Amino acid sequence: MTADAVPDPARDAGAGAGAQRERSWRAGLAAGVPYGIATGVVAVSFGVLAREAGFSAVAAIVMSAVVFAGSAQFTAVSIIASGGSGVAAVAAAALMNSRFLPMGVALAPSLPGGRWRRAAQGQGVVDSSWAMAGRGDGTFDRWFLFGSTAPQYAGWLGGTILGALAGPVLGNPKDIGLDAVYPAFFVALLIAELRRPGAPPVALVGALIALALIPFTPAGVPVLAASVAALAGIRRPVAVAATTTQEDLA
Image (cartoon, rainbow, N blue to C red; front, side, top):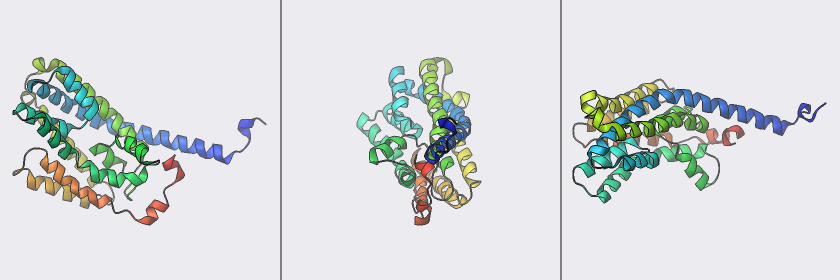
């Protein structure tokens, strides 16, 4: 009998956990592709607008590679294009991204390791991935989240490169309908949440907050305010935390 044929519970458990991680990653990757395509189209619009605002192609591309946050980047570019200062643009972008605070708090118990390791894993959080990775019981599948974010990052960076380099050829984003993709993205996200057990009340509250603010607030603020509904995901029963499996923490 070979060494591989000898039963080893620890080895078998590790292999099972690895297989589960791969399945979650692949499922997330498949789920993230449609959002990655939509993200790429929105990113083309960002690349064009950034060039029109005076950004160099390199600056626009580096911004997308590092920031990877559509609402924050559009806000910053809009402020700079209207004559605002860089400090104001950074402050507004940070405010836009503050919606990730409650999302991160809700996700944290599902991430293993110390604070720095959890912070590094948290960089994979985007709106759609966070929503799709939720299991419905207050916990999250982190490998599904990582997989679903990967095509969106590729789409965002690739779209920005195309928009930044081919902006003069593409023309105004509104003339070719790119401005409609961003709201359509969030409508698709809302529809997906309405199908998730236990999620419809929170999703509807967030949608109503956004709809109520759209006529009265600057662009981006409704999305920021609607993220307050995510606070409902922070309250997680102790029993759920106790049943988190070792393969989730591997």
